[in-house]
Amino acid sequence: MQTTVASVSAMLLYPSVLRSSPLVMQRIHQIVFVYSLLALSWFAMMAVHEFGHVVGALATGGSVERVVLHPLAISRTDVSPNPNPSIVVWLGPILGCVVPAAVWWLIPQRFFAARDIAMFFTGFCLLANGAYIAIGSFDRVGDCGVMLQTGSPLWTLLLFGLLTIPLGFYLWHRLGSAKHFLADPFMVDPIVAYTLLGVLVVMLALELTISPR
Ligand SMILES: [Zn+2]
Image 1 (cartoon, rainbow, N blue to C red):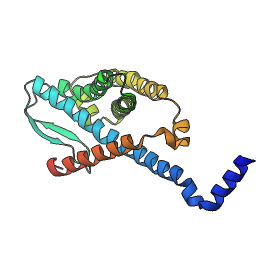
Image 2 (image 1 turned 120 degrees about the horizontal axis):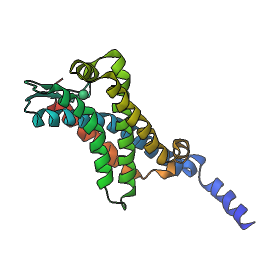
Image 3 (image 1 turned 45 degrees about the horizontal axis):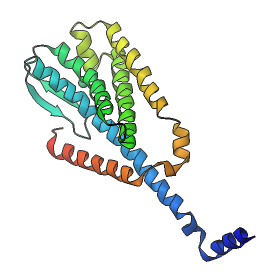
Image 4 (image 1 turned 135 degrees about the vertical axis):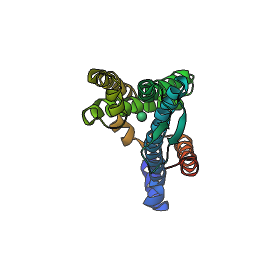
């Protein structure tokens, strides 16, 4: 009876908008988290992939002319002279997967949120690089064209996708149900959501100011 009286008084005293506002606010935090994480994953994935090409160039005596990481352009690394284009081209997708996995592995267990984000990002990079190389092998464009022209057999490109794509899906699967996550906005920590947004804004600002197009 007391509970009923309390809930009826609460309904009379507070309008429904205010009563539901914690949920509305948490839903906004969730939207910020999801969109920031996806956008950041996309731009950071390209940055790590290009980092792989740069490492490949430097390791084989090549000279990096230009790294394009502009948000409005498809990323690319121009290397000239390029004594070993095969190594340079393969290290983009390979380090593009290995570096995120290493970062995830190095984050201490107690940082749950950072580990989950790094795990999501590793899965994202495995899927993106795997799909780019395996599916791109049919069009022979971009990195795939260079790989095939420099002597990599088609099956090596397909094998790369065959290893990375299932592993990427496996990591995402281990994070738990996306449906469950989206249904419960209280699973998102607002501090984490706005930290991701901040990192995304800084990254885009840096790319817009520093990178050529
Ligand atoms: Zn590339």
